[in-house]
Length: 434
Image 1: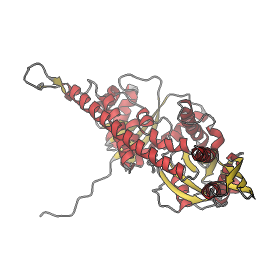
Image 2: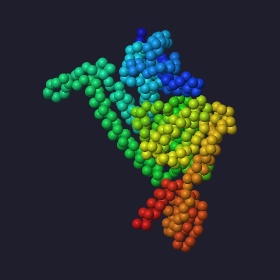
Image 3: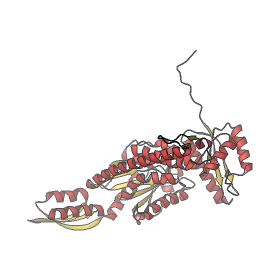
Image 4: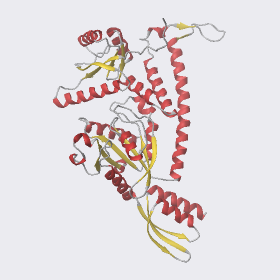
């Protein structure tokens, strides 16, 4: 008898393997354990059920399988015993290594790059995010099109009236992927231009932009929601947020700012994603203040901090970010509640301890943002004709007027302005005088 009740699919059983080449020192053992824990978190975040996890020490990288023959055999037995459907190898595999491991283990094998691409594909919500994910997937697939895959070696007939051997499937696939990549890049450029217009519109408003950056799962989206009252997706999982999200909030001084949540950083991010997700970091380059959110309770928090700073420094070296970006950073030491509260966290100069989950320390964070914006302001004197009330109103709206002397013909004001606002105002003055 047939039934309309859908049959629930059983979860996919997975093993996570970390090949590790470093010396067996105590600090390196801790680093390996933290890296394995991160890989397990990545795999679990897309619904895989982790039934086995292990660090495999490598004496040397084998070109054929990466792992030694004994390790491959031991892993094959574990795959059979635990009924593993997919093995996640937390490193980058060559196409040959991936294919040989799949043959030897009798199950699907994916590397770190493919795992992160799958996560990004599941999380991307906006059109830009979806385009970026597809582009990264295609660039990764193109690197896999090698002659180790026998089904791609079959030939098919050529086009047109002339005969000939035709083209192999691998050549056709490579050509189709190349054509799609070209179209995607064109679409992405259009989306970036559109977002550039939105940024230009915000600069005309304008409000200072404060961007949240940090290692994935540091609590950026939870902090974003706590400060803005928004409902951005925030879960205890890696890469919960992929697309830039922006909201306006008001600081204790009454000054309005735009808060921007960005994609989380991670160590050894695949090169395809560094390029494909460049646009998500453009908001950081435009920001007046950068909030570096850290999970201060994580055992590898220092290494995570270094990973984030390395990416930002790379942006500075490429000209995407100002070379003195560090002066704009406020370090936010999040998850203080897991260490006994904000008072239990030793804060460095220029940092603030908070708990985005409980709200502890958030007033101090807002005050620190206020103070940093004030420090960045410049004190300028302007003489405004009495009839130019719009210019005077603009200064009151976008700066802090500290003194005012009203005369019969003109008003002399002393005002504190952010450098960008000063440039905009003086452009208005120049346009008026033409």
